[in-house]
Image 1 (cartoon, rainbow, N blue to C red):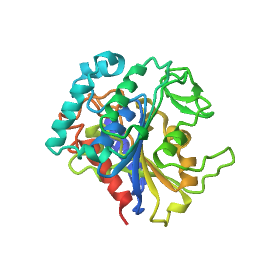
Image 2 (cartoon, helix red, strand yellow):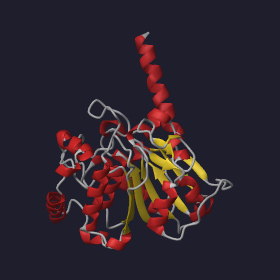
Image 3 (cartoon, rainbow, N blue to C red):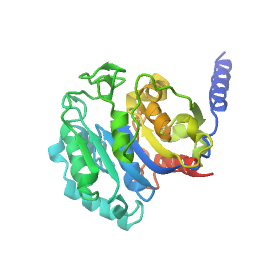
Length: 328
């Protein structure tokens, strides 16, 4: 009986993996990234480590690069005690990583576009933490390229115009109906002069599930707290267009596939902006593990001391996904 159940679960897992297709080769360019909560920290990590190719970042309820210093106790400080986050020390650590070539040269970030958001009613990540992220980026990015939205009465949530729970709440799945189109605002700041969707905007592109296992070389994705399946939206004009932009979205811990399926990927508002403005959107996915029971992205080193660098397992997998989408 137990063996039958085991085999049944294995066959079910195989069927899920085989149902997902491969991420396509789109010949995309102009890579950018964004995220919410732990996803915002991952977006910042990915931007800093891959700044040779990433030209913009959006971070909602995030924190500065390497704030946790690979320690869970410091990670707590990086969420709730901004007065104990010392950006001078983070600059020093960034220089060390740069000198050892485990992140790209920080000079690459000078002309990049940075968009930051924190709700004044956020009870999970202190709003002052995002202010520290702004201070970090002002060391490396031209001031005129940074936009910080810190004055909205929003909880710990990803703001949408009209989808989700009450905006002031700080509860799962952290998608808030705020009368504010965060996905458009951040993408418009990053790329500029984008066409804004309205209620009549239709999606004619392909929303796909893709196999994330292809991007792990040694162990399966779950060994590094990543799912076997990710999502992507390919606008109708990008199916055969080799000039589309590419944006990588890192979900928050309560927005991952194993918690809410594709609800975040379909309803956060990115796809509508993408359809009208030729932006391919990739939504990689995490899973919960014993070392990471909340399904966070690795911003405090649960996958090892090099997690925050180009040698990190999650960052490496995302880099390979991006490389695939950029290829022809």
